[in-house]
Amino acid sequence: MDRALRASLLDCYLTLDAFSDARAALRDIKMRGHRTAILSNGTPKMLAAAVAAAGIELDAVLSVDAIGIFKPRREAYRLASEHLRLAAPDIVFVSSNRWDVMGAAAVGFRTAWINRTNMPEEYGPTPNAVFTSLAEVTSLA
Image (cartoon, rainbow, N blue to C red; front, top):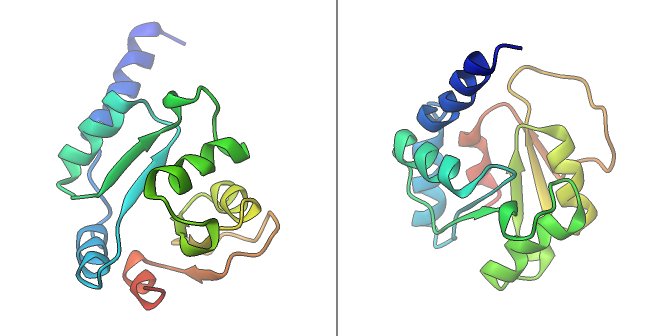
């Protein structure tokens, strides 16, 4: 692969917009008194740029860079419990990546899979909820 193309593609992560339902869903969750966070394999620089580009407000932006271990390793998900000072069952972990939902469930988080395109189930354990949009997540809060 052309290194310039690779760098250009990776730079696209710095300007990603959020899905159209993300801002309203996050606002609704926060209005109900819950905290919001991102837990990502991305770098802090990439995450800060993506959050700013998407125009979303979060209580925490957590990168696995802090521990040098990528999701779906259990240690990565424990960052959220430690940072938020919550027990695993008190965290609702939401992702459109089924492998990420599997990893979060393995540490005891309640999970919701955003399956926007009706993909087949491919991992266990089963998510606590499956939705087609983030708007539906507010039913868990």
